[in-house]
Amino acid sequence: MQSVKTGLIGCGNISSVYLKNTSMFTSFAIVQCADLDVERARERAEEFNIARYGTVADLLDNPEIELVINLTTPHVHAQISRAILEAGKHVYSEKPLAVLLQDGEDIVQMARERNLRVGVAPDTVLGAGIQTCRQLIDSGEIGTPVAATAFMMSHGHEHWHPDPAFYYQVGGGPMFDMGPYYLSALVTLLGPVRRVTGSTSIAFPERTITSSPKAGEVISVETPTHIAGVMDFHTGAIGTIVTSFDVWSEGLPCIEVYGTRGTLSVPDPNRFSGPVRILRPGSKVWDNIPITYGYNENSRGLGVADMAAAIQTGRPHRANAEMAYHVLELMHGFHIASDEGRHYELVSTCSRPLPMDEDGGVS
Image (cartoon, rainbow, N blue to C red; front, side, top):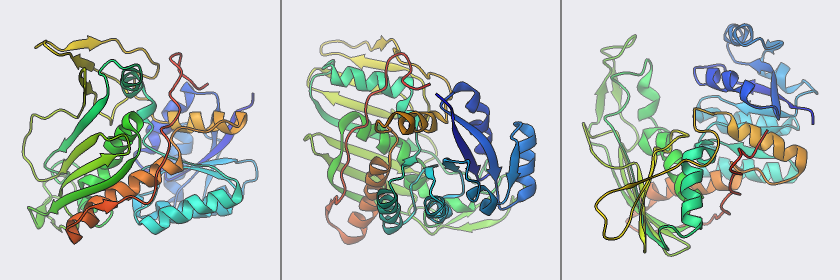
């Protein structure tokens, strides 16, 4: 089976791990890269031995390319993904699917009308850690899930990121920045959500950058930086999520799932690995569970590989647009519920993606 010829748009920092990891997979091959800054595209092409580089228009005009990876900044995800679909190519986008709900809906509808596929990060949910957790839940190791918690707590990015202003603008904040990892993991493990409520706040209206090269610049915070949400899953389980850039320290788990026969400790959903642990009734000691699935290391690009293999075989791909749109609506739902003082009923739904095969699942 031939590799799906793939282009890459957006040659910033995150592109390097995608390009490095292509050697792990045979289902796709990156043959061209593009960026608004053509010089940056040239540098990436030379670094990773890509035969062709240039403008976005040149890449989209290349008839050999079937699939395009969209690694642009979030506020232009929708614009670039639409252009890719209009060019008749499948698209795999970094998270989130879009910033605005309407843009996300438009992308899903456009792909459906053109019989094209949309894939969306994170693909960490396809890695060894989350897949092991899913198998444990599906096999009844903790009984019936009744609740879950998820926490992503930090003091933000201005003390280490070279250009942190985006994280405090609309489309940023801790929920839109990191929420997709946590929410995609919860949907993978527990299924879709029917309604949410939430509270949001901004503890620090201004942030002073202390990292180079913009140390001393002041950022005006335009989006909530502490979001507490509650989710009612269709299964009846209740989930709690807190994402924050407003805390100095914390000692909370990333994700825990509470079942009728035990508690499952889920690893960091921003990573592919473990550890995975279960605390059983009557015990005060966590059992360490062996990781039984492939892709235990940093495997970003796994979602692209799975999507490319699915295109070739006709099966559904796992990191798909329906789940990504459901996650996007969840994130908006917490903010809407807080602003309007009510529960927000989800319009979208999705299926849990197919589990990965224990031997890896894609080529």
